[in-house]
Image (cartoon, rainbow, N blue to C red):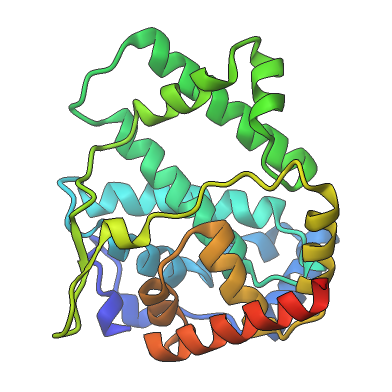
Length: 258
């Protein structure tokens, strides 16, 4: 865990336990049966996940002790809402919630000043997204958000973008001694597939049929939004391996949805 080193006051990361999948499943069974101590064990057994996730925020101006506490809130929300029947690991579900909590904390404490009305709208949008996701297991569409909050769809992106820290698209994000990879090389395709119901149904079915590791990588890459390097660090494998698995997974999904 040395590469995930994060200094937190009063915590020796070497002493933190790490739960395997079998123990995690047993604890969730106890938790869902009403054993409140199981929840505490799940939290304590996943604190390293919070620390590893905080690695990406190491270069910020914010105190890591504070970010750790905020990250634990995200972990707790993940444990409270995790559905083991989805076939995902807790870590796959928890990391986006941990990151979301930390980013919200950073946005709330940023020096960038935005209009109070726009900021309030952004918080309403994020609150509705969280409530909707907890209830339905998926994020609401822009149309659903706009209808619920009685706003135009373009206002959603405008409000949320106002809380983001600006970053140059020429920001270098990776260099292995060869060609540098810039942010512009990693910009995602924002095409909205929500209108293609048949395609979404086919994709869901295909994801249930491919290998578990292939499924995890596709979800991490194209739903969570992680880079190949982030996935490689988390899984303890090389970026080249992630790339090969990703290509194989995409090819297998293509065959299944034809």
